[in-house]
Image 1 (cartoon, rainbow over the protein chains, first blue to last red):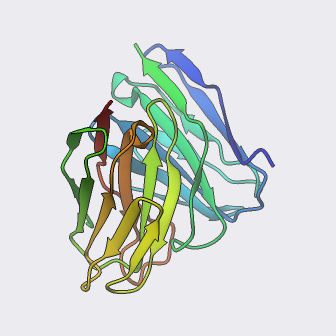
Image 2: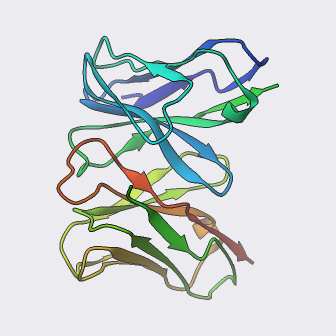
Length: 113
Length: 113
C-alpha cells in the first residue's frame, strides 16, 4: 500500500492564482482531513470528510474548498491564493471516527508571492 | 472552542538526559493521541490513550492520561539523537466522535550529542 499520497510536493503561486492540491489514499479509509502547519501553530484543521459526498469545515476553512467524490480522493482547492496561505499542507486519513489513528501524507509546501 | 496547549514549546537536552512534554486541554477529551514529526517530515502516530489515568510505555517513552482526561504527558528516558523532532498531542472533544481532531502546538525537542 502507498498509504496517503500528496501532489505536488512543492508549489509557488502568485497572489490571486488558483490551484488544487491532490490527496489520495489506498487504505479504504472513510475519514480524510486537510491540515495546514505554520511555524509555532501546530496543525490546524481546514476541512474534513467522513465519507464520499460528505464534507465539513474545520478550524480555518476560509479560502479553501473541498469535495469528496470517491473514497480514495480528497482534493483541496485554493480559490484565489493569498500570501497568508503560505504554509505546509498535510492530508490525513483514518479508518473511522475521531478515536482512530490518523495517517498523514508527506505534505505540500506552498509559497504564495 | 476547544484548545489544546503544550509546554514547553522548545526543549534542548544533552544526549542521555530525560525529557518531558505536557499537554493540556480546555475540555475533557474522549481520547488523546501522540504524534512525532521529524524535521522536514510528516506527523507519525505514536500512541493513543483512552482511559482515565492510563499509562502506556513504548521502550524509553512513557505516556500518561490524566484522571480528569484533560491533560497528558510524554516522558522520554535517556534521550538519543533519534528522538529529535516535534511531539504533538491531539484529541477530539468528549462526546464528539466526528473528525474534529485538535492538535496542540507541539514541543520541539533537540538532542545535543
